[in-house]
Image (cartoon, rainbow, N blue to C red; front, side, top):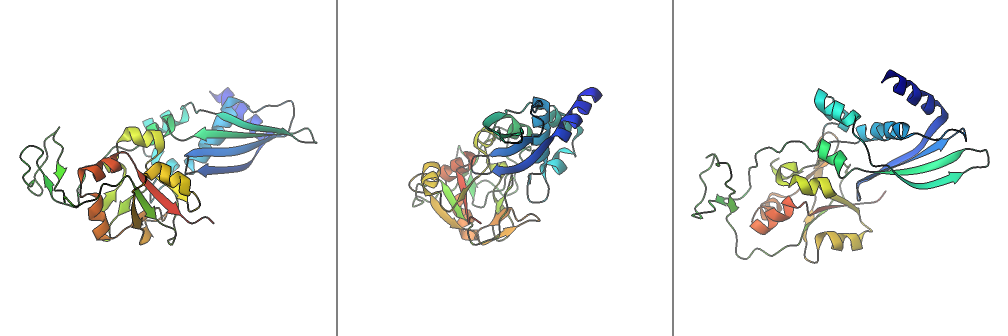
Length: 273
């Protein structure tokens, strides 16, 4: 183990990470490595070391980075350190001085997100919930038995939406793996607790879309999405989004809407810098 670390340090002296970014629309880490010595090619261990360093710096939620999150659990930290990443070489260019530039992509979906998804906490819906058997309103603060899934007390006039678009173009906003949508009273409207982990692992909790990506918006949210105006951002990192109490209740007002939340059909439209 120490010998491998020593070799990685030698490689790092001969390499230079010149550029990196996270594509939050497609949940991909991209970075470029310059190889100074033409006889030295970056090993998989070195590429993973670079990639994991960049992943650690990603905002995990509204108050911590990925690194801060995994440091709290020794077993999780070890799993992350030994996690084999999917490395895709997308470009290679040779320069006149004999050095070479390699461009890589590391998908954050799949095994990476599967490792980092936090355990879900109990949900408190914003509308009255009913028993799935008798359709009677479930008593407030009464525990729900395991295996029982309450249903929202639906408004028959509630439109059939195909997704949710949160227009956050007019608020300061940063990106994170697991942001929250909250109402004006600070109650959760959407978070990892409302999502099916399999959808999170495959496509991310939300899809951040630049305002120019109208085609992607339609593909992801369908032809009849509910458009939601973000009132402000919240949290230390400005990654949580506040929406109105009225709109928040709409998101919980039908089984169809709750299923869309489970499937993470939530797009966040942001202003490009």
